[in-house]
Length: 241
Image 1 (cartoon, one colour):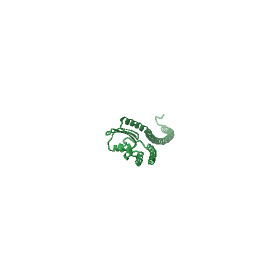
Image 2 (cartoon, rainbow, N blue to C red; image 1 turned 120 degrees about the vertical axis):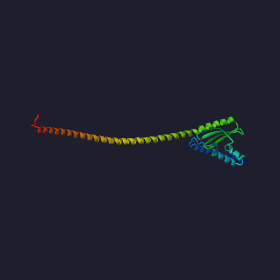
Image 3 (cartoon, rainbow, N blue to C red; image 1 turned 90 degrees about the horizontal axis):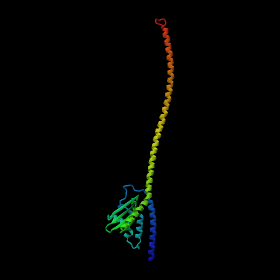
Image 4 (cartoon, rainbow, N blue to C red; image 1 turned 180 degrees about the vertical axis):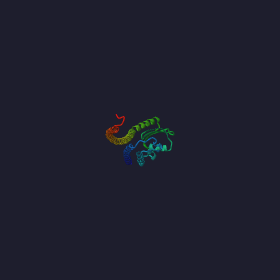
């Protein structure tokens, strides 16, 4: 009877490793999600266990030879979730770094602390302890872990913002360039018209100048003729010099 029990436990352990591996891939995929913006943090009573934790609990509860009940197999994650739903805990501390977070809860009735690490809307790890100092140390470690995990996420968010900003600047610059080009085209067209007008005006002025000179010459000629005719008309009259 011991061999079947050993085999079942070995199969459970192998399934656990497989699920943990798949869970790691799921966490990597979740890391590609954008960091939450201000005002969109999930309420703690909306958090859920990680899919990996769910699968492990199902695998553990499926083994009838484990000697544990379903509640025990669910572990600290499900226990913490239930206590949050029942409003039996006091939230002492919570820290967010990107989409990662850590919380420290206190259960006054049993003087017990729960330290939780979560990502997005899923609990990741939950540690239960009656030692306040140990709970604070675990919480500090979880906070440091969230800071490390969120570095690439925060960097990606900043790079996305920088890219969007640069694209906006490019769009504004292109629009300004189009406006300047349009103004330049108008200026060139108008300058060409002005140059044509100047040439036309200069030609007309030159022609008028020539006509004026001819008119002046004609006027002098006519005036000379008038004076000559005037003298001829007045010849022989008194006072004629």
